[in-house]
Length: 593
Ligand code: ADP
Ligand code: MG
Image (cartoon, rainbow, N blue to C red; front, side, top):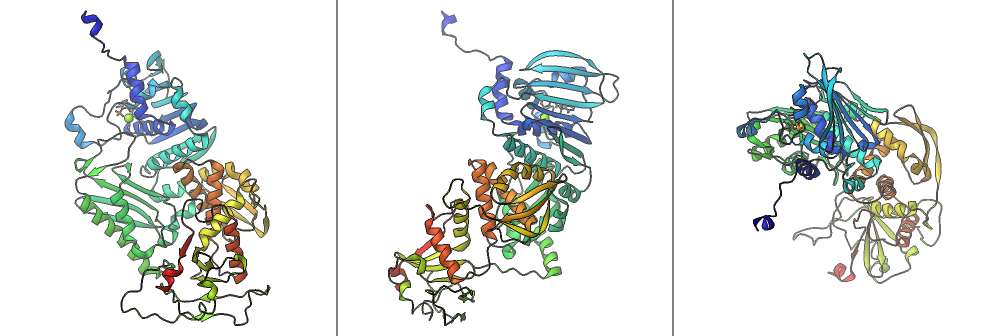
């Protein structure tokens, strides 16, 4: 009878491992992270990563670390098999990257793994084949000292996982991100990354600054300022970006603790706060900052796939980090006398009591007639940085159209404010249009395939321009090349990492294409990583944003009217492709108030 009611089984190890594997290894990049960390823990000074098909068919890591004995080589695939901790107390003094003894057991449960390893003073090494947690063979093997671990056909026995993988480009960018997070802070070790037979990185041991230049591009180091600070609690070393190189997208923001990449919202804020108002609007600085703290004062006993860390002394750390960054920036600003002309936000809040409006200085052409198309550019420009629009403005009052319902768009006069906003009358009120965002929407729609608005237009450059990329970015440029050509760029690869551009779409008003492409790639990568939009959409959105961001010269009356008309021809005129608001309407009632 009892036989019938007992229903609990102990799962066989192979099944348990496969379940656990789902948590540790969810995509090729997480296997890469575990293997690279193991090699570092083994004391390797040179670590080579070889990939095929973005890690789908092969992830191999070869190191010159301590290697393993015959029996350790077999044991390392058991769950909770680790050489790194022995007792619970050890958890509070972790000096290694791994300590759970889960990674290899997990990987071996969901792939075909080939391990070759040799201790430095052993004559022969060991070779083990293991497949779905089952040891297929083990034999002595002549091999160099150190370890080579090849993971083949990841998820071969977990079709659900395999089908979940994204396109190679996406998986590879995840791997590259893992690679950067490790190699940036372990700059004293040599690393290489090879994908489908092509070497993407060959990083020699050196300083952090050298590592940054190797990973990004050589000119990158000119954009950085060193930071250094030592207190009882923490040692800080690294680099922060000069304010003028801040980006709209959170690009290179790397924080490390004891050699481990972490995410920490408060410490990120500490860095950004240090910039105060040195940063242009809504942009984020780059930083590469390594903290060294007593391992007993942090809690890293967290999920292997997560990057959060808890600090005992987080308040103090916040203050120390912020002041260290401030110091670096202060020394720099003192030396160079920076000035930024960030356009203040357009602000329609009621005037504070006691506010005395200033008469804006206006220069305009009294002969201007909007109904007479004139080839000469007529510019109406408000040149006051005042944040409150003065509605007694002589220019506004004669045009009663601005206050009464009006709908014939193309001839409604427009006013440009601070080179950024366009004011015009709509039937519903006074429309304030963010010019850059409007342009972004228009360009995005124009770039959409099969769009009626699509006009492939290209302008040949007077002189071809060379652009230099990191190996990985050059690879990505290569992938995007057909699309870029389709959009009106004429460019081709010359050498491994250089592209020569001979024509651009007419809407690219940019003499300096290097930052244009850099921002474009950063923007593209960010959106393919974070959002679930397809590659074409991501590229289109990134292109439109970069083209629009650079259109800052004042517009003529006709150009403004054209822009407004083009905007309203778009089906989704009120938001950018990224979902930002383009138009704010001030209703007549609000204006009268
Ligand atoms: P953990 O790293 O948490 O200890 P892993 O499953 O990643 O667990 O590895 C298990 C053990 O295998 C390690 O503790 C280490 O002793 C050994 N090992 C793994 N990779 C290597 C390597 N590349 N070189 C030497 N030993 C290794
Ligand atoms: Mg490990």
